[in-house]
Image (tube, rainbow, N blue to C red; front, side, top):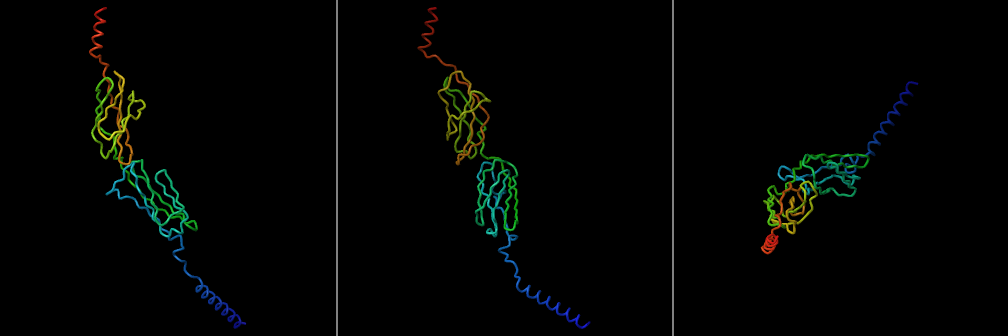
Length: 238
C-alpha cells in the first residue's frame, strides 16, 4: 500500500510539472506597444522666461502623446475652458487667447484602452496685456464746432479707436479709427462738453482697454462781423 501511494503522488507531481512547463512555453509576454499603461502624454508650452505670454496674445499649446493608437480621446483643460479631441496623431497644436494675468493650470488627460487614464499638468504664467491705451491725451477745442485730440504713441499700437460721449460715465460710441496720434472731431454743437476715450489696436486688430475719459468743451458760437453790425444797429435803434 505504501509503495502504490508513493507512485500515485509521484505521477501527480510529474503531471503538474509538465503542465507548468507547457503553460510557460505557450504564454508570451505582452507586446509593450499594445499595453495602454505604456502611453505617455506631455505638454509643450512657451518658455515664459525667454518668451513671455501676454493676455490677449495667441499662444500655441502642444500636446505630445506616445502610442496614440491606444488613446480613445484627449481632453485639455485651461482654466475653466475644456477641449476634447477624438481624432489626432502624436502631436496636437491648440491655439488659445488668454484673458487672465496670473498662473493658469493646464491639464491634459489621455483616456486609453482598458480604462487607463494618463495625466499631465503644468502651470503657465500669463502677464498683463502689453497693449495699453495712450496714457497722455490732450483734448482742446478749436472752435464752436470742433475739438482736437492728440496723444503719445502707445507701445506696439498700430491704430487707435476714438470714442465719444456726452457724459464721463455715459455710453461711449466709436467715432473714428485712426493710424495717427492726432484727431480732430468736427460738426459738434457749440458750448457743449464732450468726453473722449481712446484705445490702442495692434497689427492683429486686437484692442486694449479704453483710456480714462478726457473732457473738452466747444467754444460759444461767435458772431461774424456782419452779424455783429446788425446786432449793434438793432440795439442802437431801440
